[in-house]
Length: 317
Image 1 (cartoon, one colour):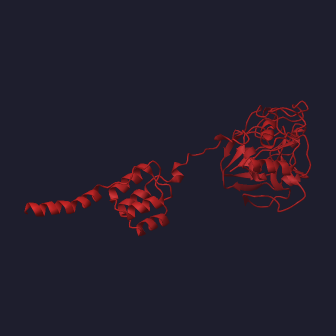
Image 2 (spheres, one colour; image 1 turned 120 degrees about the vertical axis):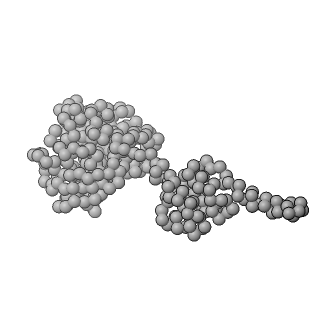
Image 3 (cartoon, rainbow, N blue to C red; image 1 turned 45 degrees about the vertical axis):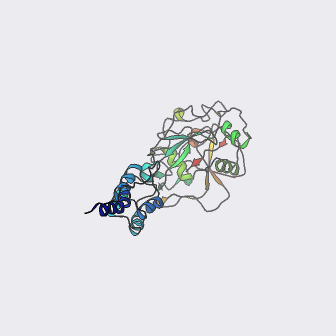
């Protein structure tokens, strides 16, 4: 080959060599499906794409539909294999376990993770104090976990969000009381949450216990015999197995449901009666006798009324 021909050949090879050496820009975040499609359709060789997928992960789930779209865009099997084995969003989410906690910046309260599960709702086995509306006991399944307030809403938290404190008893760490159902619901919505359903409340209160209470009553609850005739600061009694305080006693807690009869069979994510005249209160309060302060006791109450033994606790998804 003469010198002139060799020079021409080298000039022709330079773009190809440059293309072969081209790599995707260094990634700092997981690759989106759109970015990956752009790389595949561009002039970037397969190997650097595979390396970046392995290094940076992807921000979409590698479903068969996503793989099919990438294949249609021209992705070679090596890239598709890298996508299938890449770390997607679901795997990057920290695993949340029962009892995990986080603080809600809106109300300043701590919320506890309640995992999904199935439990026996209603009259506890062997509980001779059950009323007819606690029967029949039936299996209820909570299909999605949720964050529930570690304690009832305090006066400090309520005032922080609403600018008001309707309570009869005065104290920043005392549970807020004298709130009706609409006010309780409005507060929970204002902090980015909602009232728990009756089933969610009982499931969380039991925390795996099948008994009428999740511990010795004096250890876990403020009620008529030990309250001293007033509400008490939240979180002083022993928590249940989920790490929730004052699920029994201190103040009643509004739930979302209308008061109605229980079904005869099992349910998933029950939400109570479709309508009614009374909303439900759960848990008992500082003024109640021990027979009321049980996890299955149900109190149908006129939703517009306020009492100094009625408070609330919120759910965040």
